[in-house]
Image (cartoon, rainbow, N blue to C red; front, top):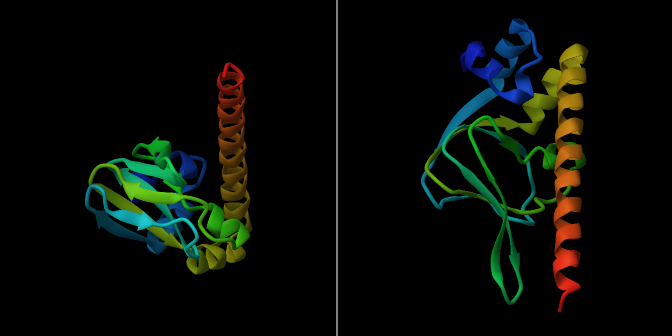
Length: 153
């Protein structure tokens, strides 16, 4: 993967050219058709994904309701990183909303890279923390709006 292309992805924007080359060396490319499932809630997670092109829908199945979309992710976004951090099953489904080109980074490869390059690990982990924090705030806002709407009934 070309380091200059990786630099445009927010997750990697603070990395040096050397670090970008190392990330590029462990990133595999994957093409996914529209509406193809990338992973399912409850599965073991061993990879994270970065959207090079297309869109990905993150959703959960709600009993009695069906699929509830949590987010539609655009190019440059990443997902599936939680499984790399906490070793728990996938918390939601990921489906190609449109045909996608994805970059796939395996957990074992990323762990080895971060073990060998502590400054790279520092930058990536802080970016993960900021992303998870932003997603948690967004979820809190959605819950607040849901309770506000449900109080009317």
